[in-house]
Image (tube, rainbow over all chains, first blue to last red; front, side, top):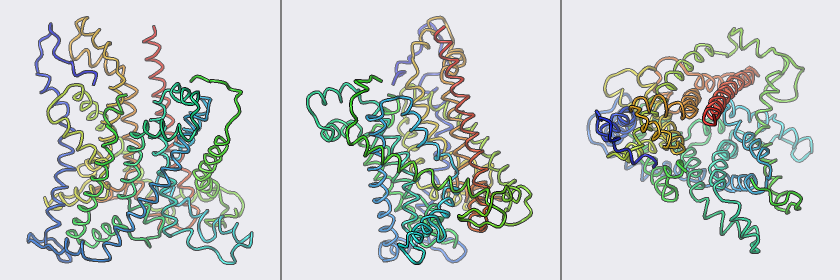
Amino acid sequence: MPAAQSAAPPHQRQVLSPKVASWLQVAPMAVIFTLMVLIPLAIIFVVSFLDYDFAQVFPELYLGSWVDLFTSQLTLNLYALTFKFVAIVWVVTFVLGFCIAYFLSFHVRSGALRLLLMAAIAIPFWTSGPIRMVSWVPLLGREGLINQALMGLHLTSEPVTWLMYSEFAVLVAYINLLTMPMVAAMANSMAKIPHSVIQAAKDAGASEGQIIRDIIFPLIKPGIAIGSIFVVTAVMGDVFIVKQMSGSQVNTVGMSIVTELNAFMYPPAAAKSIVLLVIVLSIVGLLLRFADIRKELQK
Amino acid sequence: MSKPNPRRARPLSFYFLAAILSAFLLFLYAPMACVYILSFQGPTGGMSFPMQGWSTHWFQVLFSGDGQGVGDIGNAFRRSIRLAFVVAILTMAISLSAGMAYRRKFRGSNFVFYSAITSMVLPGIFVGFGIALMFNLLGWRTNWFTSGIGAQLTWTLPFGLLIMFIVLGRFNPSYEEAATDLGASARQRFTQVIVPIILPGIIGIAMAGLTSSYEETARTSLNIGTGNTMPMEVTGLLTAASTPVLFAIGTITTLFSFTLVIVSLIVMSRLAKRRQMRTAA
């Protein structure tokens, strides 16, 4: 931290002590997080223990929402499917992201070309989400290009239906959206590895595989952690992609929370949210052990 | 970047990885290309290829707004833009102030930092639900000006704070020390030294706030009160409409976002260049 030294300059009369000044400066942000994140979080926690009927929540203790959560096979399946999505998307974006970041950082020799390719990867990120979802219909839909091609080549006689509005479609959309943050986080870490280190390893006769395993991987752990946080939280918290790409046919935890909210079933929705929150925060806490975000950003 | 020997032969892995990158770029751009091309579909054409001639028919349908499942795009757009501007300015001011606080050590710094991280990684629907529930219990009505802005700030402020860390991490404190030695007051140091130097970063925060507010739905949708924002309206249309008018919306909104991004990048690089020239002089 460059400015931990900001003891008041000697020839100046400080009106505020530095500590109080910091508190005042950070106060608006602290107030908003407290009012809009922490208090609502506490309310959700409390509501999950309350009784309810079709229209309202009663201030009476009721543990049914929690009992259902841990005993209903249906609910457990929701969590299983959500984890399946997280696992598949993480593995694919990690492998794909690493290949691309590694290629850009160590194979592309021209700086301008590298910048151009990075921009090409980043640009679609600024397209509105719903539009990116609908863009899959002309490709994967019943009458989409892929089905036209498959039928034109006589590989199938009828259109393949699992391409769109299916788990497959949801995964395609996730991977399409979330590879970019993985590439960015890893490429950022790779840019901090001095080329002389790689060159020295090469001169000493290390193979490309050895360089990746013994030098690059250990040095980009913070990047991997930050990229993974982005991917895991995006998939676990998503409801829109699942809804659009599966045509509401695939049910994840997020989707079921939304369904219950729409039916005014607040306590079970709250209980599910709390479990989801604990899972997300544990994963993030685990990943943060590999990356000190504040230190990473200030480098 | 040092080039060891440009004439050295490429290893086999180069071609393999280049193929992966090309395939990925195709995967990234093919769906969007379909949207842009199909938005010029002929009046008799449908939502998939082949093209039944070329026309701007679907753009005319969109702008004439004569029903046909186009909804309330104009109002939704105005609502979104108004919200985005307020959120962008608030994000900029609050993040700048908080970033300045982190230049010193203070008690509670971890609390605010981890609140920000929590706010960023929490499922959006969860934050939105919590805020709506709080308003519900207090008997307040959700409204774009209170719950709407608050919900969006939980999404934009963490990024604002992280950008401030990057910006201030790169800030060379010797400029500030020089100003102090010349007798500058705290206010002068802030307005005449620190802010001009980190201005591109501050504008970056505002632009990030603007674009992410414009795109956000998970936290906003339950808290916006009456009337849809742009992404909510577009999502609604996606389920309702089944004509290429959707693709026309896609082409227009993409053009708009790209203009926004390009303008902000130009402004930022202009400022950075001007600052460099001044520092060099």
